[in-house]
Image (tube, rainbow, N blue to C red):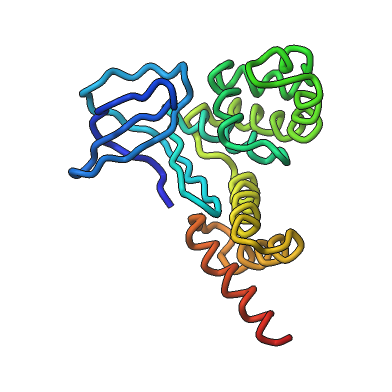
Length: 211
C-alpha cells in the first residue's frame, strides 16, 4: 500500500520506538528499530511496511530497501511478529543478518536480543536457503536493487494469509484465497497488500455463495 514516506521528522518516542513524520500536514506514526539514527526536524525518507491485524494497522520504517526486505523475510517465520523482527533488525546490520541466516549460525543468532536457542534454530531452518538467494541477488545487482519478483510475491502471500487469518478466516481458506489472488495479477505486476486483500475477499465470498 505504501512504498515509502517522505517528510519531516517531528518526534521520536524511544520507549515505543515510534517516529512521527509530518508529510503534507499529516503526522504519520512509523515504528523503527531502536538503533536507527535520525535527526529531528529534518527531511527524511523511510521505506515502509504496512502490518495489518484484526485490531490495527501499523507502519514500520527502514532507511533502505534491503532493511525492509530482511524485515519481511523474518516475518515469514511462523509465530514471529513484527515487534520481534524489529528487535532482531536493531541488533544486526541487514546484510550481516542475512549472512548469519545463510551460514546457519544459530549460536550467533540466539545471542541477539529477544531470541533464544529454539527460536534461532527455527529461523535458520525456515530462512537459511532464502537468505542465501537474497545474498546472491545482492551480489549480482547491488543493495538498492529490488528483490526478485518471485521473492516479492512470496512476501505478499505471507502477509496476505496473515491478514486474512487476523480477519477470522481459517488458515486453509486464507491460503487458498491468497494463492488465487496472486494468480489474478499478471506475472510482472506488483500488487499492494490492499489490492490483494480485496481480490482474496472477493474470492472467498464467491466460493461461500456457491455452498
